[in-house]
Length: 223
Image (cartoon, rainbow, N blue to C red; front, side, top):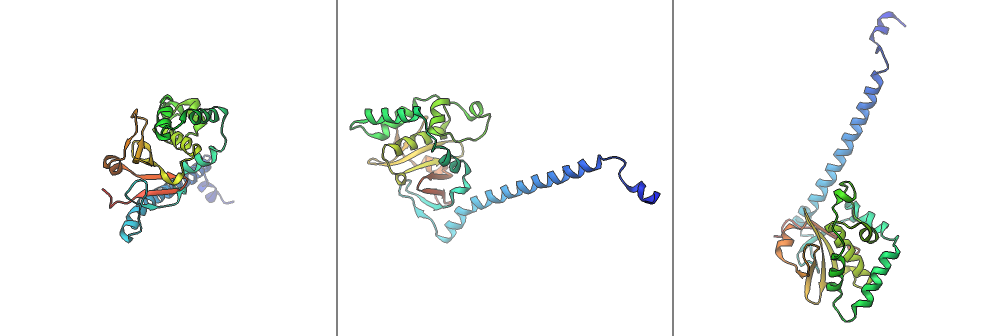
């Protein structure tokens, strides 16, 4: 090798970690781009459906919603898999509800029972991760608003309420369960002691809804 060419080579192996770091950064950049594109497509779903008139009036929420793949909500997909592993505590919880129910409204009964579980934020429970707890985890560790909604949904499903009559409604800063009961769309909210009728205040802030019947995003044409 000529002396001139040797001078152009890096003096130490430190050059190679830089190259590796550059490649790693590029991978992270591409991953971020994919996430951004996914979010843009998620947001555009409602606009496109609204433009094409592709939305349907949701029978539970009473507003136009566009159906989309629930794979866009990985937390929900993960929850539906992990919830299959139950626990004795959750089975006993549902059994007590069933025994105490009698002729009472199951919606009110479940709302009251689940609201009795202690509130614990994701920051305290999962070090800030946006984790959707299974009912068993919720009973053991407590949870935040979405975990209350998931537990109420799971309890009502266990008591025979069909998935098609319920929606876990996700807002930018909150989550509730909406059930199409004999009194119309009813909200089960961990911030309220009793259930209450679904109103435009909640609907105006809605982002998307999920249940075992599917996943929907609110159309931008809605109020």
